[in-house]
Length: 324
Image (cartoon, rainbow, N blue to C red; front, side, top):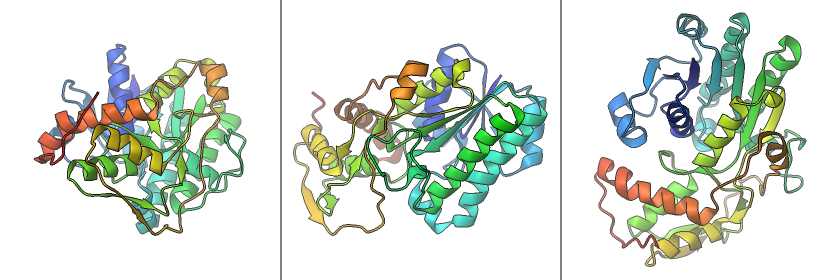
C-alpha cells in the first residue's frame, strides 16, 4: 500500500492518478486545506474515486496510527506549504508543516520499517543559483523561509538513509505548473489574466529565468524513483530541462490568446536568481526525460482551464483562445 501525503493537492493528485492508472493500491493523506473533498475532486479527480484519510502530518500520533493501521509500505511525501508568499506570511506554520511534518513521517516510517520514502524538495533550497545548469551538488543556500524549511527537511530525509538505512529518495523540482494548480503562481496567474483581458505584467521587463516544469513530468519522476532501488539515498533534479524567461512565457500565452496585452512594471527585489536545473543524474539513473516543453505544457494547462477550472469557478473567458 502506498500513501501519498498531500494527494489532493496540485502535484500529489497527479502522482496519485499515475499510481492508480498503473494498478497500485493508493491512499491519500491530506488535511484538505484547499477545500472540501467534492470541490477538489471536481478540479483534480473528475474521473477517479481515490481513497482518502483526513489527517495532518504535524500530528505524529495520527500519522503513526494511519501508517500502522493501513499497513503502509511506501510513502510519497508531497504535502507542504508550497506557495512562497504564504510561507513568508506564516513562518511558524511553514516550519511545522514542511520540516516537522516531514520528520514525523520519517520517524513513523523508521519505527514501522518502511520500504520506500520519496520526498519532494525544491530548487528553492539552492537559493541564488551560483551556476547553471545547477546540479544536485549545488550548495543549499536557501534565500527565504520556504526554501530553508524545504532544505532542512531535505537534509533530515537524507540523514534517515545514512543513519537508519531507510530507503529515501529526494526529488528537487522547480517552477512546477499545469492542471490542478490553485495557487497564484506565474503560469496560472498569466493564463487567468489573459482569459479575463487583464494585461500581463512583466516585472523588471520579465528577464527572470525559470526552468518551468510541467506537473506530469514531475509525477513521472516520482514513479521512476519509486520503482528504482538505485534511487535509494540519492537526490535528483526533475525539471523541464530548459530555462525560459518570464517574457518568453508571456509570449507563449499570447500565441494562444492573441489579444493578450503585455506591460512592463517595476522589478521586485526578492526574486532569487534561478535558471536551468541539470537533470543528467536523473536521466542516467532513472531514465528520466522531460516530455513537455513550455509551449506544450501551457497548451495543456489552458485546455484544463477551459474544460475544468472556468466551469467550476463560473468564469466566462473574455478573450478568444486558439489552441492550434
